[in-house]
Image (cartoon, rainbow, N blue to C red; front, top):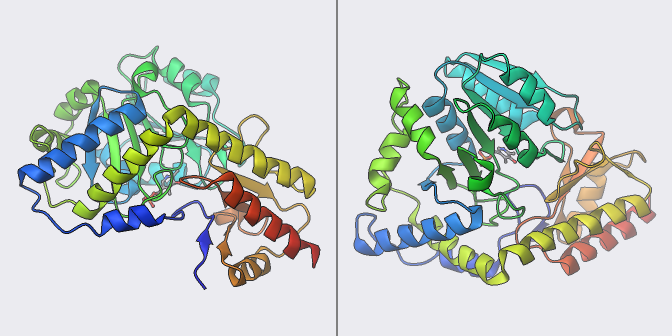
Length: 356
Ligand SMILES: *Cc1c(COP(=O)(O)O)cnc(C)c1O
């Protein structure tokens, strides 16, 4: 049976997007392509409240995480980590031979602006790496407040992994002064996986010019050369461009504020269910994710069995991530999910849990 996905990526992809993916192919050096590419950039700038450059990249989000490391770190990277995706980014710095330090909080806790301020005050760092919405724990870091702190340090670039928040939560790139804001397409955008986008500030490009060994595939300066022609250096996944263009039209038609409010409503519905079921929310209060909910499995239900039963009626949720596999479980409510669909999932879960 086909399962409707409530996992934090890939999320459910709706019919219109799948159809757009199937648009007949065009050459990537044609005017038709350049027009599509240019239109996409404009729409993404609206979504991110920015005039910064927008690059389209055929890779998953992790590719652009590596791009940030390779293009931006000259002196030393400061990685603020509250879960597995933050750990991954630190690992990318290390395996690329960069000088890097990691600053961690306990699982379920958020990165606080004071913590960032304290480390940047040492003057040791030229880059801050932060995961906006840490999907492994369901914590949403206070990005706007953290960005305010980073503004005090004009030589420090702020690099944000917004893979599981972009297009679901308002991120004001220019106002908050975010140097790189990146995401892949299989989460908030509700497209198939395999494509990524980012906004890049002028400051970032200036930095990249001073960084050696930026590599080939993810070189921002090379991205920028081709961006001037509304192209990418290598053959892009043109199908993703068609789908993203369709989806951004849907997003702008829904209205950005409406979309962000829908996500808040979904989070409230899910949190209310958690309380009614007598479970607990896993994250520290006040920092719960808006695009997904991580539930502390206080009743010690068998999540595998729950998912098996859900599968029989056409749903899939997610166990905890990594170290939290047995002790938490996760429900994603991002992309195009409606309140009605989420309520149907939750009442199905009620029905199954009642039989335990
Ligand atoms: C899913 C996810 C990633 C990894 O993205 P890929 O597209 O799988 O490379 C990185 N960071 C966060 C916060 C994520 O949720």
